[in-house]
Length: 395
Image (cartoon, rainbow, N blue to C red):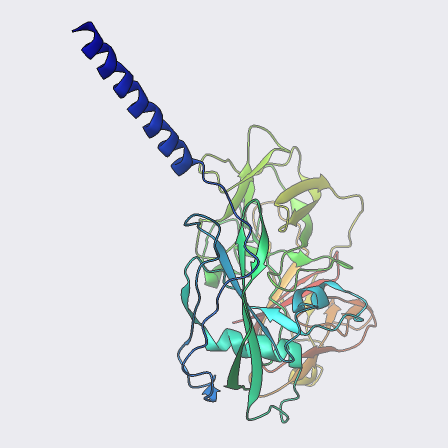
């Protein structure tokens, strides 16, 4: 009887050991490093796909053989000449302009092996690499496509290349708009804390760009600023007028600032006076520091230009009117829907002190500077006379 029990115990132990090994192999698989994987040639590959009229461009592929079903991430790459040596991202990163790309990555990253590409994204990528003039876009463009698979701990692996044919169209390439945040509070504008699109220029002040700052072309991030007279009554920053979802407030004490914290308080400066507010939207860093200077306070500000026959009496409205305000920010609603025009800023209804620049829609005016070239459209114009900074915000 003892032998029977002993044999049964040994069998049970062996079974447990075998199961444990199986479990260990299941949860700790041996990762392989595949050299390539299969991108399928789509049935439409010999056809000319009209990117302007198509709703999607389907591609499928097999998962790389990592030795187990892995959750890889996939990026689709396309080239006009079949070479994949220099990406458009590398070209963008080279400020000298010497780098020339021969392929681009579609911005979306996929987790599936069966995807529908956005034709507009394909057209944009082709334009970025080809740089066609508006009247020189070809009726047919052969494109070489491949897929990059990425998995943590494993080198990236690339599929084979397939040939596709597209009818592209001209895409006007523009940098992403600069990410602007807005000041709102008891010591901002009329002090009402009114958070709405219509409150820009009355209860909300957009922050200004910073001279010499390079802004990310893809997402518009970088350092923005504001200089003005603030009081201890408090303020905050919000990203989108009409929403409190994205905001900056104060933590336990002045100098400790927090973003998107429901428990954050109003930012309260230690004493009434002039301050510089700087926000780096790329690194999410906010500073509020005393401003060293004695700004001139102007009684009025005007905006003369071609649109009004250079009438120096066309007054802008002061933005800051809260109790105890010292105003240095001005706004005006400019209707340039009839066509391109020009503008400048002039203090106290005369030309003695005026600001101009060649930049649009953001810039910094200088004394007797150039006329600001204003593109056709309708704008809220804001101007800070301490910085000479201005913004033309499309309505």
